[in-house]
Image 1 (tube, protein in one colour):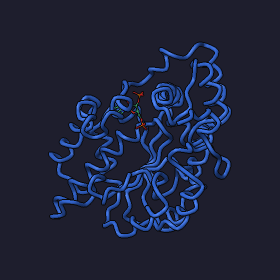
Image 2 (cartoon, rainbow, N blue to C red):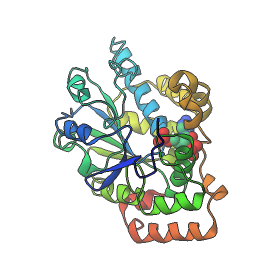
Image 3 (tube, rainbow, N blue to C red):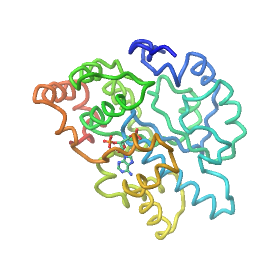
Amino acid sequence: GEKMTREEKLFTYKGIAYPTTVCSPEIFKALESFKARSDDVILAGYPKSGTNWVGHILTDLVTTTAKNDGDETNGSNDEQQGEFPYLEIGDVDKYQRMEKMPSRRVIFTHLIPPNLPVSVFKNKAKVLLLIRNPKDVATSFYHFSNSLSPLPSYETFDEFFTAFMTGQMPWGSYFDYIFEWNKHAADENVMTITYEELKENRASGVKRIAEFFDLPLTEEEIQGVVKRSSFQAMKDNSQESHGAFGQTLFRKGDVSDWKNLFNEDQNQEMDKTFEERLAGSQLGAKLKY
Ligand code: A3P
């Protein structure tokens, strides 16, 4: 078919850019009717913050708990009647099918709170908010965009950097994302975790997550989840879990890889924007790099 231009690859919904190939105005319309449950396990994060990593941890925790309760199918994304775990990606009938899914449903989303269905906050679903420092997110996003044809591609990092800083990205601006979620950072039903702290101590992160969602695992079971969520373990299993796409997804898994890509001007510009928009906020204080 004909190649889509960079502009055609994105469309706007409520002021935010989304990728045309996986989202649509029809999906967002249908999404308004989605009914969140208080026992849903929701993972929210800006793209490239480690969604698949933490999503894997969550799914593993929920599946292990379900198995302990004698339920062999619940909690596994593969077995959740084949639904793709990303809330805003799918066909318009997805939300009707999701109503029939047994608890606990594991759901991922890249949406900001104003674009989420109101029931998420009204029904007090628990949300794990995953954040990662903007320089590494930009680095990861740049490589990812250039590897996947449905996403915009860039000749140079400089070109990408401009798009990132002005929010011309799938799922919008990183800075707007953190700014909007910061309004919910103190909510009782929202727990924040950073990519960096999970890199530093996976066991303590996994334990915090299990406690937040009331998933009673033994120490041994926790260690199993920790072991299965190492970068190497997930990369080795990527063909099985994600097919060819796994090659693109499990790239480096490091902190500070931005140092191999940013020039000094870009570094300073991002520091300045960070300072202006996020530094004084609760989430901003957690973002270290
Ligand atoms: P890099 O591109 O910096 O390597 P998302 O899932 O939100 O798209 O995020 C992808 C990023 O998470 C990639 O970052 C990827 O390598 C990293 N990642 C995936 N699994 C990981 C793991 N087990 N440990 C650490 N990082 C992981």
